[in-house]
Length: 154
Length: 454
Image (cartoon, rainbow over all chains, first blue to last red; front, side):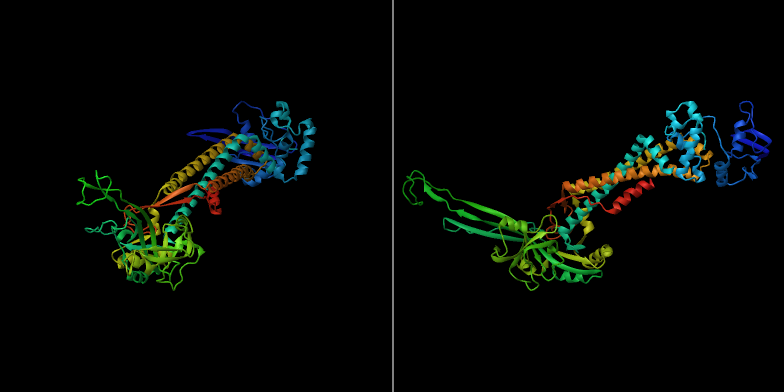
Protein backbone atom coordinates (compact mmCIF):
# COMPACT_ATOMS: atom_id res chain seq x y z
CA UNK A 1 0.00 0.00 0.00
CA UNK A 2 1.18 3.49 -0.87
CA UNK A 3 0.70 6.46 1.41
CA UNK A 4 1.93 9.87 0.25
CA UNK A 5 1.89 12.69 2.80
CA UNK A 6 2.36 16.36 1.90
CA UNK A 7 4.74 15.46 -0.92
CA UNK A 8 6.51 18.41 -2.49
CA UNK A 9 9.05 18.31 -5.29
CA UNK A 10 10.90 21.48 -6.08
CA UNK A 11 13.26 21.89 -9.02
CA UNK A 12 15.77 24.70 -8.99
CA UNK A 13 17.44 25.97 -12.15
CA UNK A 14 19.66 28.95 -11.44
CA UNK A 15 17.60 31.50 -9.57
CA UNK A 16 14.33 30.03 -10.81
CA UNK A 17 12.41 27.59 -8.62
CA UNK A 18 9.56 25.43 -9.88
CA UNK A 19 7.26 23.38 -7.65
CA UNK A 20 6.38 20.32 -9.72
CA UNK A 21 4.45 18.83 -6.81
CA UNK A 22 3.05 20.84 -3.94
CA UNK A 23 1.54 19.18 -0.85
CA UNK A 24 0.27 15.95 -2.41
CA UNK A 25 -1.60 13.56 -0.13
CA UNK A 26 -2.50 10.22 -1.71
CA UNK A 27 -3.31 6.69 -0.57
CA UNK A 28 -3.33 3.69 -2.93
CA UNK A 29 -4.47 0.43 -1.44
CA UNK A 30 -3.32 -3.01 -2.63
CA UNK A 31 -5.24 -4.01 -5.75
CA UNK A 32 -6.30 -0.47 -6.58
CA UNK A 33 -5.92 0.78 -10.12
CA UNK A 34 -5.30 4.50 -10.39
CA UNK A 35 -5.31 6.74 -13.43
CA UNK A 36 -3.68 10.14 -13.15
CA UNK A 37 -4.71 12.70 -15.70
CA UNK A 38 -3.53 16.25 -16.13
CA UNK A 39 -2.05 18.87 -18.43
CA UNK A 40 1.47 18.72 -19.77
CA UNK A 41 3.88 19.93 -17.10
CA UNK A 42 1.34 19.22 -14.43
CA UNK A 43 3.66 16.93 -12.48
CA UNK A 44 2.33 13.46 -13.53
CA UNK A 45 5.76 12.05 -14.39
CA UNK A 46 7.29 13.60 -11.28
CA UNK A 47 4.63 11.93 -9.14
CA UNK A 48 5.28 8.57 -10.81
CA UNK A 49 9.02 9.00 -10.20
CA UNK A 50 8.29 9.51 -6.49
CA UNK A 51 6.00 6.48 -6.37
CA UNK A 52 8.44 4.40 -8.40
CA UNK A 53 11.34 5.23 -6.09
CA UNK A 54 13.27 6.78 -8.97
CA UNK A 55 13.48 10.18 -7.30
CA UNK A 56 12.96 11.55 -3.80
CA UNK A 57 10.59 14.35 -2.76
CA UNK A 58 11.90 17.70 -1.53
CA UNK A 59 9.66 17.29 1.48
CA UNK A 60 6.94 14.96 2.70
CA UNK A 61 6.93 11.16 2.76
CA UNK A 62 6.22 8.40 0.23
CA UNK A 63 5.51 5.19 2.12
CA UNK A 64 5.36 1.81 0.44
CA UNK A 65 4.20 -0.91 2.81
CA UNK A 66 5.42 1.20 5.70
CA UNK A 67 8.82 2.02 4.23
CA UNK A 68 9.42 5.70 3.50
CA UNK A 69 10.96 5.88 0.05
CA UNK A 70 11.94 9.50 0.73
CA UNK A 71 14.37 8.63 3.47
CA UNK A 72 15.31 4.98 3.05
CA UNK A 73 18.84 4.13 1.96
CA UNK A 74 19.83 3.73 -1.68
CA UNK A 75 20.51 0.00 -1.38
CA UNK A 76 17.12 -0.70 0.19
CA UNK A 77 15.39 1.54 -2.32
CA UNK A 78 17.05 -0.38 -5.16
CA UNK A 79 15.95 -3.62 -3.59
CA UNK A 80 12.37 -2.34 -3.23
CA UNK A 81 12.36 -1.34 -6.90
CA UNK A 82 13.50 -4.80 -7.87
CA UNK A 83 11.05 -6.63 -5.60
CA UNK A 84 7.88 -4.54 -5.47
CA UNK A 85 7.80 -2.00 -8.26
CA UNK A 86 7.34 -2.51 -11.96
CA UNK A 87 7.62 0.36 -14.38
CA UNK A 88 6.54 0.54 -17.99
CA UNK A 89 8.18 3.53 -19.60
CA UNK A 90 6.63 5.79 -22.15
CA UNK A 91 9.33 4.79 -24.64
CA UNK A 92 10.42 1.17 -25.02
CA UNK A 93 13.60 1.53 -22.95
CA UNK A 94 14.92 -1.88 -23.88
CA UNK A 95 18.65 -2.66 -23.77
CA UNK A 96 19.48 -2.53 -27.47
CA UNK A 97 22.20 -5.18 -27.38
CA UNK A 98 20.21 -7.80 -25.46
CA UNK A 99 17.59 -10.14 -26.86
CA UNK A 100 13.94 -9.91 -25.81
CA UNK A 101 14.43 -12.82 -23.42
CA UNK A 102 17.55 -11.26 -21.90
CA UNK A 103 15.78 -7.92 -21.54
CA UNK A 104 13.10 -9.59 -19.44
CA UNK A 105 15.79 -11.42 -17.49
CA UNK A 106 17.45 -8.15 -16.45
CA UNK A 107 14.60 -7.52 -14.02
CA UNK A 108 15.34 -10.83 -12.27
CA UNK A 109 19.10 -10.27 -11.97
CA UNK A 110 18.97 -8.04 -8.84
CA UNK A 111 16.67 -10.58 -7.19
CA UNK A 112 19.40 -13.20 -7.37
CA UNK A 113 17.38 -15.63 -9.48
CA UNK A 114 19.59 -18.34 -11.00
CA UNK A 115 20.29 -18.09 -14.74
CA UNK A 116 18.40 -21.22 -15.75
CA UNK A 117 15.32 -20.14 -13.83
CA UNK A 118 15.65 -16.61 -15.21
CA UNK A 119 15.71 -17.89 -18.77
CA UNK A 120 12.71 -20.15 -18.18
CA UNK A 121 10.60 -17.47 -16.49
CA UNK A 122 11.49 -14.85 -19.11
CA UNK A 123 10.60 -17.22 -21.96
CA UNK A 124 7.32 -18.15 -20.30
CA UNK A 125 6.40 -14.49 -19.85
CA UNK A 126 7.21 -13.62 -23.45
CA UNK A 127 5.21 -16.57 -24.72
CA UNK A 128 2.28 -15.42 -22.58
CA UNK A 129 2.21 -12.08 -24.43
CA UNK A 130 2.58 -13.67 -27.84
CA UNK A 131 6.28 -13.03 -28.32
CA UNK A 132 7.39 -16.67 -28.07
CA UNK A 133 8.99 -16.48 -31.49
CA UNK A 134 10.95 -13.36 -30.65
CA UNK A 135 12.92 -14.70 -27.68
CA UNK A 136 16.30 -14.37 -29.40
CA UNK A 137 15.55 -11.18 -31.28
CA UNK A 138 17.19 -7.90 -30.31
CA UNK A 139 14.92 -4.80 -30.17
CA UNK A 140 16.05 -3.55 -33.58
CA UNK A 141 14.72 -6.79 -35.07
CA UNK A 142 11.27 -6.25 -33.63
CA UNK A 143 8.45 -3.89 -34.51
CA UNK A 144 7.50 -0.98 -32.26
CA UNK A 145 4.47 -2.84 -30.98
CA UNK A 146 6.48 -5.93 -30.22
CA UNK A 147 9.06 -3.86 -28.38
CA UNK A 148 6.36 -2.28 -26.31
CA UNK A 149 5.10 -5.76 -25.54
CA UNK A 150 8.35 -6.87 -23.95
CA UNK A 151 7.47 -6.65 -20.26
CA UNK A 152 9.79 -5.18 -17.63
CA UNK A 153 10.26 -8.47 -15.89
CA UNK A 154 8.24 -11.68 -15.70
CA UNK B 1 24.13 -11.76 -17.17
CA UNK B 2 27.38 -9.83 -16.64
CA UNK B 3 29.24 -11.91 -19.23
CA UNK B 4 26.38 -11.96 -21.73
CA UNK B 5 25.78 -8.23 -21.46
CA UNK B 6 29.52 -7.51 -21.75
CA UNK B 7 29.94 -9.78 -24.75
CA UNK B 8 26.94 -8.25 -26.51
CA UNK B 9 28.11 -4.70 -25.84
CA UNK B 10 31.65 -5.34 -27.12
CA UNK B 11 30.45 -7.20 -30.19
CA UNK B 12 27.91 -4.47 -30.92
CA UNK B 13 30.54 -1.73 -30.69
CA UNK B 14 33.29 -3.58 -32.48
CA UNK B 15 34.77 -0.54 -34.19
CA UNK B 16 34.91 1.51 -31.02
CA UNK B 17 36.37 -1.41 -29.08
CA UNK B 18 38.94 -1.97 -31.83
CA UNK B 19 40.00 1.70 -31.90
CA UNK B 20 40.42 1.78 -28.12
CA UNK B 21 42.25 -1.56 -28.07
CA UNK B 22 44.54 -0.61 -30.96
CA UNK B 23 45.40 2.75 -29.42
CA UNK B 24 46.21 1.02 -26.20
CA UNK B 25 48.19 -1.68 -28.00
CA UNK B 26 50.22 0.88 -29.90
CA UNK B 27 51.05 2.78 -26.72
CA UNK B 28 52.12 -0.32 -24.83
CA UNK B 29 54.07 -1.68 -27.81
CA UNK B 30 55.92 1.62 -28.17
CA UNK B 31 56.77 1.78 -24.49
CA UNK B 32 58.09 -1.80 -24.57
CA UNK B 33 60.07 -1.23 -27.75
CA UNK B 34 61.55 2.09 -26.67
CA UNK B 35 62.45 0.75 -23.23
CA UNK B 36 63.95 -2.41 -24.68
CA UNK B 37 66.00 -0.52 -27.23
CA UNK B 38 67.11 1.90 -24.52
CA UNK B 39 68.14 -1.06 -22.38
CA UNK B 40 69.99 -2.44 -25.39
CA UNK B 41 71.74 0.91 -25.84
CA UNK B 42 72.77 0.91 -22.20
CA UNK B 43 74.05 -2.63 -22.53
CA UNK B 44 75.93 -1.68 -25.68
CA UNK B 45 77.48 1.32 -23.94
CA UNK B 46 78.41 -0.85 -20.99
CA UNK B 47 80.03 -3.32 -23.36
CA UNK B 48 81.95 -0.53 -25.04
CA UNK B 49 83.12 0.83 -21.72
CA UNK B 50 83.98 -2.60 -20.36
CA UNK B 51 85.92 -3.44 -23.49
CA UNK B 52 88.12 -0.48 -22.73
CA UNK B 53 88.01 -0.47 -18.99
CA UNK B 54 87.72 -4.04 -17.95
CA UNK B 55 85.35 -5.69 -15.58
CA UNK B 56 85.68 -4.33 -12.12
CA UNK B 57 87.40 -1.14 -13.20
CA UNK B 58 85.58 1.84 -11.79
CA UNK B 59 87.99 4.55 -12.85
CA UNK B 60 91.36 5.18 -14.39
CA UNK B 61 94.08 7.58 -13.37
CA UNK B 62 96.26 9.15 -16.02
CA UNK B 63 98.70 11.98 -16.07
CA UNK B 64 97.07 15.36 -16.30
CA UNK B 65 97.52 16.96 -19.64
CA UNK B 66 100.28 19.52 -19.68
CA UNK B 67 101.31 22.06 -22.27
CA UNK B 68 103.85 20.61 -24.68
CA UNK B 69 107.39 21.83 -24.17
CA UNK B 70 109.68 22.89 -26.97
CA UNK B 71 110.80 19.91 -28.95
CA UNK B 72 108.49 17.54 -27.15
CA UNK B 73 106.21 17.17 -30.11
CA UNK B 74 108.81 15.67 -32.33
CA UNK B 75 107.68 12.63 -34.24
CA UNK B 76 109.49 9.32 -34.23
CA UNK B 77 113.00 9.28 -35.68
CA UNK B 78 114.43 6.34 -37.53
CA UNK B 79 118.11 5.94 -38.26
CA UNK B 80 119.42 3.74 -41.04
CA UNK B 81 122.95 3.20 -42.30
CA UNK B 82 123.77 3.71 -45.95
CA UNK B 83 125.76 0.54 -46.20
CA UNK B 84 128.00 -0.26 -49.10
CA UNK B 85 126.29 -3.44 -50.17
CA UNK B 86 124.01 -3.00 -53.08
CA UNK B 87 120.84 -4.20 -51.37
CA UNK B 88 120.64 -4.54 -47.60
CA UNK B 89 117.43 -5.04 -45.64
CA UNK B 90 117.21 -2.91 -42.53
CA UNK B 91 114.64 -2.71 -39.78
CA UNK B 92 113.98 -0.31 -36.97
CA UNK B 93 111.33 -0.20 -34.24
CA UNK B 94 110.30 3.03 -32.67
CA UNK B 95 108.57 2.48 -29.31
CA UNK B 96 106.72 5.38 -27.72
CA UNK B 97 104.44 5.62 -24.73
CA UNK B 98 100.94 6.48 -25.83
CA UNK B 99 100.34 10.15 -25.36
CA UNK B 100 103.98 10.68 -24.49
CA UNK B 101 103.30 11.29 -20.81
CA UNK B 102 103.52 8.75 -18.03
CA UNK B 103 103.12 8.51 -14.29
CA UNK B 104 105.62 7.19 -11.78
CA UNK B 105 104.92 3.59 -10.81
CA UNK B 106 105.00 4.59 -7.18
CA UNK B 107 101.72 6.44 -7.72
CA UNK B 108 99.99 3.09 -8.10
CA UNK B 109 100.64 2.42 -4.41
CA UNK B 110 99.56 5.94 -3.48
CA UNK B 111 96.31 5.55 -5.36
CA UNK B 112 95.75 2.10 -3.85
CA UNK B 113 96.23 3.58 -0.39
CA UNK B 114 93.41 6.10 -0.83
CA UNK B 115 90.31 5.55 1.23
CA UNK B 116 87.61 3.75 -0.72
CA UNK B 117 90.01 2.14 -3.18
CA UNK B 118 89.76 -1.64 -3.20
CA UNK B 119 92.50 -2.26 -5.69
CA UNK B 120 94.74 -0.37 -8.11
CA UNK B 121 96.99 -1.64 -10.83
CA UNK B 122 99.28 0.14 -13.28
CA UNK B 123 99.63 -0.48 -16.99
CA UNK B 124 101.85 0.98 -19.66
CA UNK B 125 100.53 1.65 -23.15
CA UNK B 126 102.99 1.77 -25.99
CA UNK B 127 102.79 2.46 -29.68
CA UNK B 128 105.31 0.56 -31.75
CA UNK B 129 106.10 1.72 -35.24
CA UNK B 130 108.13 -0.76 -37.17
CA UNK B 131 109.88 0.32 -40.34
CA UNK B 132 111.72 -2.23 -42.43
CA UNK B 133 112.97 -2.33 -45.97
CA UNK B 134 116.09 -1.75 -47.96
CA UNK B 135 118.10 0.80 -49.80
CA UNK B 136 119.42 0.03 -53.28
CA UNK B 137 122.61 1.76 -54.21
CA UNK B 138 122.64 3.75 -57.42
CA UNK B 139 125.25 3.19 -60.14
CA UNK B 140 127.44 5.95 -61.42
CA UNK B 141 127.66 6.19 -65.21
CA UNK B 142 129.36 8.75 -67.39
CA UNK B 143 127.37 9.98 -70.32
CA UNK B 144 128.74 9.36 -73.78
CA UNK B 145 131.32 6.88 -72.62
CA UNK B 146 129.63 3.86 -74.04
CA UNK B 147 128.25 2.85 -70.77
CA UNK B 148 131.62 2.40 -69.10
CA UNK B 149 131.83 2.98 -65.47
CA UNK B 150 134.31 5.60 -64.54
CA UNK B 151 135.33 7.95 -61.87
CA UNK B 152 135.99 11.57 -62.18
CA UNK B 153 139.40 10.86 -63.56
CA UNK B 154 138.29 8.46 -66.18
CA UNK B 155 138.54 9.40 -69.78
CA UNK B 156 135.67 9.94 -72.10
CA UNK B 157 134.93 13.52 -71.37
CA UNK B 158 131.28 12.95 -70.15
CA UNK B 159 130.05 13.96 -66.68
CA UNK B 160 129.36 10.89 -64.44
CA UNK B 161 125.73 10.39 -63.37
CA UNK B 162 124.19 8.18 -60.68
CA UNK B 163 121.46 6.04 -62.10
CA UNK B 164 119.06 3.62 -60.43
CA UNK B 165 118.94 3.09 -56.68
CA UNK B 166 116.18 3.92 -54.18
CA UNK B 167 114.51 2.72 -51.07
CA UNK B 168 111.54 0.49 -50.27
CA UNK B 169 110.21 0.44 -46.71
CA UNK B 170 107.14 -0.95 -44.97
CA UNK B 171 105.69 0.82 -41.98
CA UNK B 172 103.71 -1.18 -39.44
CA UNK B 173 102.19 0.29 -36.29
CA UNK B 174 100.65 -1.63 -33.43
CA UNK B 175 99.82 -1.12 -29.82
CA UNK B 176 101.40 -2.83 -26.84
CA UNK B 177 100.16 -2.93 -23.27
CA UNK B 178 102.38 -3.66 -20.33
CA UNK B 179 100.36 -5.69 -17.84
CA UNK B 180 100.92 -6.26 -14.15
CA UNK B 181 100.97 -10.06 -14.31
CA UNK B 182 100.26 -10.37 -10.59
CA UNK B 183 96.88 -8.61 -10.90
CA UNK B 184 95.40 -9.55 -14.24
CA UNK B 185 91.80 -9.41 -13.05
CA UNK B 186 92.08 -5.63 -13.13
CA UNK B 187 93.59 -3.77 -16.03
CA UNK B 188 93.94 -4.21 -19.79
CA UNK B 189 93.67 -7.99 -19.83
CA UNK B 190 90.57 -8.10 -17.64
CA UNK B 191 88.30 -7.73 -20.67
CA UNK B 192 90.12 -10.40 -22.63
CA UNK B 193 89.40 -14.09 -22.70
CA UNK B 194 92.25 -16.45 -23.49
CA UNK B 195 91.00 -18.60 -26.33
CA UNK B 196 94.26 -20.37 -27.07
CA UNK B 197 97.30 -21.10 -24.91
CA UNK B 198 97.45 -19.44 -21.52
CA UNK B 199 97.84 -16.05 -19.95
CA UNK B 200 100.84 -14.84 -17.97
CA UNK B 201 101.75 -16.57 -14.75
CA UNK B 202 102.38 -14.37 -11.70
CA UNK B 203 106.04 -15.38 -11.88
CA UNK B 204 106.49 -13.98 -15.39
CA UNK B 205 106.98 -10.43 -14.20
CA UNK B 206 109.92 -9.90 -16.54
CA UNK B 207 109.62 -12.82 -18.92
CA UNK B 208 109.93 -12.41 -22.66
CA UNK B 209 106.48 -13.71 -23.34
CA UNK B 210 103.42 -12.14 -24.94
CA UNK B 211 99.68 -12.56 -25.20
CA UNK B 212 98.42 -11.43 -28.59
CA UNK B 213 94.95 -10.23 -29.52
CA UNK B 214 93.23 -12.66 -31.84
CA UNK B 215 92.70 -10.13 -34.63
CA UNK B 216 96.37 -9.14 -34.59
CA UNK B 217 97.49 -12.77 -34.36
CA UNK B 218 95.37 -13.56 -37.40
CA UNK B 219 96.84 -10.66 -39.33
CA UNK B 220 100.41 -11.67 -38.47
CA UNK B 221 99.69 -15.40 -38.54
CA UNK B 222 100.92 -15.79 -34.97
CA UNK B 223 100.08 -18.91 -33.02
CA UNK B 224 100.92 -20.07 -29.54
CA UNK B 225 104.66 -20.76 -29.64
CA UNK B 226 105.36 -18.24 -32.41
CA UNK B 227 108.04 -15.66 -31.78
CA UNK B 228 108.40 -12.07 -32.87
CA UNK B 229 110.75 -9.22 -32.21
CA UNK B 230 110.25 -5.78 -30.80
CA UNK B 231 113.31 -3.55 -30.85
CA UNK B 232 115.54 -6.59 -31.10
CA UNK B 233 114.00 -8.49 -28.20
CA UNK B 234 112.36 -11.77 -29.08
CA UNK B 235 109.03 -12.62 -27.45
CA UNK B 236 107.26 -15.96 -27.44
CA UNK B 237 103.49 -16.01 -27.85
CA UNK B 238 101.97 -17.89 -24.91
CA UNK B 239 98.34 -17.07 -25.49
CA UNK B 240 95.80 -15.69 -27.94
CA UNK B 241 93.14 -13.50 -26.40
CA UNK B 242 89.70 -12.42 -27.58
CA UNK B 243 87.85 -9.43 -26.15
CA UNK B 244 84.64 -10.16 -24.24
CA UNK B 245 82.88 -7.72 -26.52
CA UNK B 246 83.72 -5.43 -29.39
CA UNK B 247 87.19 -5.43 -30.83
CA UNK B 248 90.46 -5.40 -29.04
CA UNK B 249 92.13 -2.02 -28.99
CA UNK B 250 95.47 -3.47 -27.96
CA UNK B 251 97.42 -5.82 -30.19
CA UNK B 252 100.11 -7.21 -27.89
CA UNK B 253 100.22 -7.68 -24.14
CA UNK B 254 103.58 -7.97 -22.38
CA UNK B 255 104.63 -8.18 -18.76
CA UNK B 256 104.82 -4.63 -17.42
CA UNK B 257 108.59 -4.66 -16.86
CA UNK B 258 109.21 -5.75 -20.42
CA UNK B 259 106.99 -2.99 -21.73
CA UNK B 260 108.78 -0.46 -19.52
CA UNK B 261 112.14 -1.60 -20.88
CA UNK B 262 110.94 -1.36 -24.45
CA UNK B 263 109.43 2.07 -23.97
CA UNK B 264 112.42 3.33 -22.03
CA UNK B 265 109.95 4.06 -19.26
CA UNK B 266 111.47 2.40 -16.21
CA UNK B 267 109.12 2.64 -13.22
CA UNK B 268 106.49 4.38 -15.26
CA UNK B 269 102.89 3.60 -16.14
CA UNK B 270 100.47 5.44 -18.39
CA UNK B 271 97.27 4.32 -16.72
CA UNK B 272 96.30 3.24 -13.24
CA UNK B 273 93.18 1.09 -13.14
CA UNK B 274 91.18 1.54 -9.96
CA UNK B 275 88.47 -0.59 -8.42
CA UNK B 276 86.40 1.18 -5.78
CA UNK B 277 85.42 -0.64 -2.61
CA UNK B 278 81.85 0.59 -2.99
CA UNK B 279 80.38 1.28 -6.41
CA UNK B 280 78.17 3.98 -4.88
CA UNK B 281 81.22 5.89 -3.67
CA UNK B 282 82.94 6.24 -7.03
CA UNK B 283 82.46 10.00 -7.22
CA UNK B 284 83.85 10.47 -3.71
CA UNK B 285 86.85 8.26 -4.43
CA UNK B 286 87.48 10.20 -7.62
CA UNK B 287 87.52 13.47 -5.69
CA UNK B 288 89.82 12.00 -3.09
CA UNK B 289 92.34 10.78 -5.64
CA UNK B 290 92.31 14.06 -7.50
CA UNK B 291 92.87 15.93 -4.27
CA UNK B 292 95.59 13.69 -2.88
CA UNK B 293 97.47 12.65 -6.00
CA UNK B 294 98.29 15.82 -7.86
CA UNK B 295 99.01 16.02 -11.53
CA UNK B 296 96.56 13.29 -12.45
CA UNK B 297 93.31 13.04 -14.31
CA UNK B 298 90.74 10.64 -12.89
CA UNK B 299 88.16 9.32 -15.30
CA UNK B 300 85.18 7.28 -14.17
CA UNK B 301 83.08 5.08 -16.40
CA UNK B 302 80.33 7.70 -16.36
CA UNK B 303 82.84 10.32 -17.55
CA UNK B 304 83.83 7.93 -20.31
CA UNK B 305 80.19 7.22 -21.15
CA UNK B 306 79.69 10.94 -21.72
CA UNK B 307 82.37 10.85 -24.39
CA UNK B 308 80.72 8.06 -26.37
CA UNK B 309 79.74 9.36 -29.75
CA UNK B 310 78.95 7.83 -33.11
CA UNK B 311 75.78 6.05 -34.15
CA UNK B 312 75.48 4.31 -30.76
CA UNK B 313 75.31 7.67 -29.03
CA UNK B 314 72.97 9.10 -31.64
CA UNK B 315 70.68 6.09 -31.43
CA UNK B 316 70.82 6.17 -27.66
CA UNK B 317 69.91 9.84 -27.64
CA UNK B 318 67.08 9.13 -30.05
CA UNK B 319 65.79 6.25 -27.96
CA UNK B 320 65.92 8.12 -24.69
CA UNK B 321 64.76 11.43 -26.13
CA UNK B 322 62.49 11.09 -29.12
CA UNK B 323 61.50 7.50 -28.33
CA UNK B 324 60.45 8.24 -24.80
CA UNK B 325 58.48 11.29 -25.79
CA UNK B 326 56.94 9.47 -28.71
CA UNK B 327 55.75 6.64 -26.49
CA UNK B 328 54.45 9.10 -23.90
CA UNK B 329 52.65 11.03 -26.64
CA UNK B 330 51.12 7.87 -28.07
CA UNK B 331 50.07 6.73 -24.60
CA UNK B 332 48.52 10.12 -23.92
CA UNK B 333 46.74 10.06 -27.29
CA UNK B 334 45.54 6.51 -26.65
CA UNK B 335 44.27 7.58 -23.24
CA UNK B 336 42.45 10.57 -24.70
CA UNK B 337 40.85 8.51 -27.44
CA UNK B 338 39.85 5.80 -24.97
CA UNK B 339 38.52 8.35 -22.49
CA UNK B 340 36.53 10.21 -25.15
CA UNK B 341 35.07 7.05 -26.63
CA UNK B 342 34.23 5.61 -23.23
CA UNK B 343 32.70 8.91 -22.14
CA UNK B 344 30.68 9.13 -25.35
CA UNK B 345 29.53 5.54 -24.92
CA UNK B 346 28.42 6.17 -21.32
CA UNK B 347 26.59 9.37 -22.31
CA UNK B 348 24.83 7.49 -25.08
CA UNK B 349 23.78 4.80 -22.62
CA UNK B 350 22.38 7.03 -19.85
CA UNK B 351 18.83 5.96 -20.66
CA UNK B 352 19.94 2.32 -20.67
CA UNK B 353 21.56 2.65 -17.25
CA UNK B 354 18.47 4.51 -15.97
CA UNK B 355 16.31 1.61 -17.08
CA UNK B 356 18.56 -0.87 -15.30
CA UNK B 357 18.43 1.22 -12.14
CA UNK B 358 14.66 1.40 -12.39
CA UNK B 359 14.62 -2.38 -12.67
CA UNK B 360 16.49 -2.56 -9.40
CA UNK B 361 20.08 -2.85 -10.52
CA UNK B 362 22.29 -1.36 -7.82
CA UNK B 363 24.64 1.41 -8.97
CA UNK B 364 27.69 -0.75 -8.28
CA UNK B 365 26.38 -3.45 -10.63
CA UNK B 366 25.89 -0.89 -13.40
CA UNK B 367 29.35 0.55 -12.72
CA UNK B 368 30.83 -2.93 -12.68
CA UNK B 369 29.31 -3.59 -16.07
CA UNK B 370 30.89 -0.45 -17.60
CA UNK B 371 34.23 -1.04 -15.88
CA UNK B 372 34.16 -4.65 -17.01
CA UNK B 373 33.81 -3.56 -20.62
CA UNK B 374 36.77 -1.18 -20.22
CA UNK B 375 38.85 -3.87 -18.54
CA UNK B 376 38.20 -6.40 -21.29
CA UNK B 377 39.04 -3.74 -23.86
CA UNK B 378 42.20 -3.00 -21.93
CA UNK B 379 43.14 -6.66 -21.68
CA UNK B 380 42.71 -7.15 -25.41
CA UNK B 381 44.71 -4.00 -26.16
CA UNK B 382 47.29 -4.84 -23.51
CA UNK B 383 47.79 -8.36 -24.80
CA UNK B 384 48.03 -7.11 -28.34
CA UNK B 385 50.44 -4.36 -27.26
CA UNK B 386 52.69 -6.76 -25.37
CA UNK B 387 52.73 -9.09 -28.36
CA UNK B 388 53.54 -6.21 -30.72
CA UNK B 389 56.20 -4.85 -28.39
CA UNK B 390 57.82 -8.25 -27.96
CA UNK B 391 57.74 -8.81 -31.71
CA UNK B 392 59.39 -5.43 -32.33
CA UNK B 393 62.04 -6.07 -29.67
CA UNK B 394 62.71 -9.57 -31.04
CA UNK B 395 63.02 -8.12 -34.54
CA UNK B 396 65.59 -5.58 -33.34
CA UNK B 397 67.53 -8.34 -31.59
CA UNK B 398 67.30 -10.62 -34.63
CA UNK B 399 68.41 -7.93 -37.06
CA UNK B 400 71.09 -6.74 -34.58
CA UNK B 401 71.82 -3.46 -36.32
CA UNK B 402 75.47 -2.54 -36.05
CA UNK B 403 76.24 0.65 -34.20
CA UNK B 404 79.56 2.36 -33.96
CA UNK B 405 80.77 3.88 -30.75
CA UNK B 406 83.53 6.39 -30.65
CA UNK B 407 85.15 7.03 -27.36
CA UNK B 408 86.34 10.50 -27.84
CA UNK B 409 89.40 12.21 -26.44
CA UNK B 410 88.80 15.45 -28.19
CA UNK B 411 89.15 17.47 -25.06
CA UNK B 412 91.86 15.34 -23.63
CA UNK B 413 90.06 15.18 -20.35
CA UNK B 414 89.39 11.50 -20.25
CA UNK B 415 91.53 8.63 -19.27
CA UNK B 416 90.81 5.41 -21.03
CA UNK B 417 92.74 2.24 -21.01
CA UNK B 418 95.68 1.15 -23.06
CA UNK B 419 93.42 0.91 -26.03
CA UNK B 420 91.66 4.08 -25.18
CA UNK B 421 94.88 5.81 -24.52
CA UNK B 422 95.49 8.53 -22.08
CA UNK B 423 93.97 11.91 -22.26
CA UNK B 424 96.60 13.32 -24.46
CA UNK B 425 95.81 10.98 -27.28
CA UNK B 426 94.04 12.78 -30.04
CA UNK B 427 92.71 9.81 -31.95
CA UNK B 428 89.30 8.34 -31.23
CA UNK B 429 88.67 4.66 -30.57
CA UNK B 430 85.92 3.34 -32.74
CA UNK B 431 84.17 0.14 -31.82
CA UNK B 432 81.39 -1.61 -33.63
CA UNK B 433 78.72 -3.24 -31.56
CA UNK B 434 75.49 -5.08 -32.34
CA UNK B 435 72.32 -3.66 -30.84
CA UNK B 436 69.90 -5.92 -29.03
CA UNK B 437 66.59 -5.08 -27.37
CA UNK B 438 66.25 -7.13 -24.20
CA UNK B 439 62.74 -7.18 -22.76
CA UNK B 440 62.50 -7.51 -19.03
CA UNK B 441 59.34 -8.21 -17.04
CA UNK B 442 59.89 -4.76 -15.51
CA UNK B 443 59.60 -3.19 -18.96
CA UNK B 444 56.31 -4.96 -19.62
CA UNK B 445 55.04 -4.07 -16.15
CA UNK B 446 56.07 -0.46 -16.74
CA UNK B 447 54.24 -0.29 -20.06
CA UNK B 448 51.08 -1.86 -18.71
CA UNK B 449 51.34 0.15 -15.48
CA UNK B 450 51.74 3.43 -17.36
CA UNK B 451 48.73 2.61 -19.45
CA UNK B 452 46.70 1.63 -16.35
CA UNK B 453 47.61 4.92 -14.68
CA UNK B 454 46.64 6.76 -17.85
